[in-house]
Length: 287
Image (cartoon, rainbow, N blue to C red; front, side, top):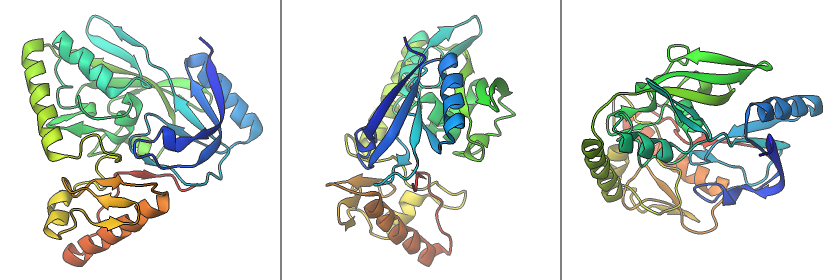
């Protein structure tokens, strides 16, 4: 396997979960540690502006890219040790969750239906059904300032849908998760129940970026928006899901502008009712 792969003139709408985005001049897919060092050295030499991406399940790409390139984490190994699991953070969260559940290791039964990669899940401290990625993480190997370093769970400063990586963009190469033994039959049952709840309550097989806004300690965004009668609200090629008010769907050939227009409408409606602007959970890449 090559250390990295370079693709040119890539249509990012084809990688995006919501199918929005323009073409990026260069996309670097990093496959291993040598690839990390080689790509970062190359981009530093060229003085390129770049942005790190994972599974593209929470990123709203621009319709026209001004930056030169994107870096995609393609590190997907999985190794089981005596008391912990080591994984490349380009691996999908679903694949790790399936592995853990089948082995009877608890902590991932609520994460089974969350799209995207482990790296993205760590950045956003992804969670559902009383599980968060931070519940079982021990540490992570990152690449920063030209070298690999290990961060402890405490170093990563996890909070609701957030981590230190929200403020400091680094390449998260691998992560280590504790093994908490249960039984596979029990975990499979819980996971199936959670998947059923998600299918029943959220848009399934629709083009979305998941929850648009973060919930607050004071209110549940979807409940507030539902009370404001926005289910099915449409603006050009985007629509508030008829099933869950915190999801925005691409129902045509939507653009970033279309998505952000309806975001402004929803934020203003919430502010007019509660005098609070809900915080975006979706990551907006402006250029």
